[in-house]
Length: 490
RNA sequence: GGUCGGUUGACCGAGUGGCUAGGUAGCGGUCUGCAAAACCGUGUACGGCGGUUCGACUCCGCCACCGACCUCCA
Image (cartoon, rainbow, N blue to C red; front, side, top):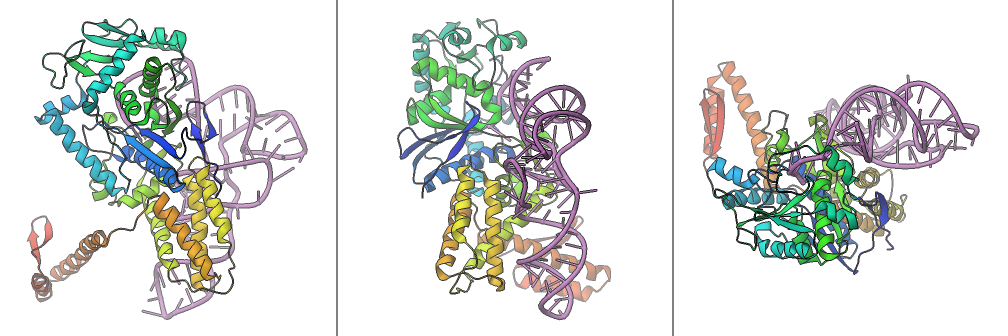
């Protein structure tokens, strides 16, 4: 099939045809999380967006190297390039080694990503494992004249860079304006200019994560890791760089500056940015404290949650909106997504039960074409879903006997839905174990409720019988002050 | 204040200068012992005011409101 994948390149602000540098190979770099606390709903967005892209490119036949970093050092609390490292701060708080913090939250992140059925990246490099590479890049930047050392710290000379290149092109900033309205912050005396950013920071004596370098014992600046690691694993010039919209400035702007300064050329060919998930209209972010973690979403344990939502509901919910639109969290929207996802999944199962006819009254090929067109149009999953639901209606109509399909078309349908629902959108059926666990807990609620009714009517024989019968199958009921709880004693 | 984006029916969420997006919920119907599912049908939706046009939700201008970034953030 002939494809014409268009993606929206944030750098030029329009949809452009996607043509890899070295087909069939595609290099994809995505900014991963800073691992200092649990992953929240906001983290699911880029993970799913770029998982979708990874899956689709692979489906189209590209050989994709998908690199997503883990930031485990160097991410400071504020722009003054002063203060605690986010991870170090958490380590002090929890009385752990910084790397223990990293290990803990990295594991949680991976588990959550697995639950959301995102494919693991080809390479998942960590900043702390690439100190040498980052130092080498700093040397190159200094050699090119765009880095300067002050008291053991190295800063990027934005002003000088902007004379030859264009600092601010990605985010639409003009350097002069940036300088004009930048607040004066503590700890910036070392910089020539308030817009300069740290490439290397000298560590204070109490700082825990630090490495030797030609300039000082210290640690790399946050923006540097992505430049260093993308170059290392994808080459000096690579195809796609993705991340959240909130990283455009300053993070990605600085990355562009670093790579361009060091290499004398642009590193990234296509920039892609997913939009934010909002809660009550405001961005969900750890620093704003208005976030719901993925674990909370899956368990339902959060005051804003009316019920637990399984990972596939979250995935479907995110795919229902286009990745460049904001989407607002609400129970109502999630519940609608839950129903929709179930309807879709059920229809996929129905395909196998269809009875073939000698003629088809529906046009599967046209449907297939529309599905590819939707994906080719900058990964337009909401439109893709609308087409798939058209297919769902067809499937159910055939099952009802209102429409007919041939054997060949049934196979087409099966392939189409397998490819798009499972392969590309990455939805999956809940495992029978998960269904079993959920069902058990719901059934127990019903039983306990019925027993409670009996107790209130003082029908002790009935309530005792329920408890004894359950005991025999290994379920123990305990009437506590807070209510009846149950446990399995198998 | 600067830059950028948004405002679509009960809710979520696409999209287009004239032709049904889709999902969820609601209502009516088919089916059915009842219910559910499924199918069929159903809603003066496009922030306000002007302008361009044969025709605008879709283009232009102004206004209002909301948000993102300009500090760390997915």
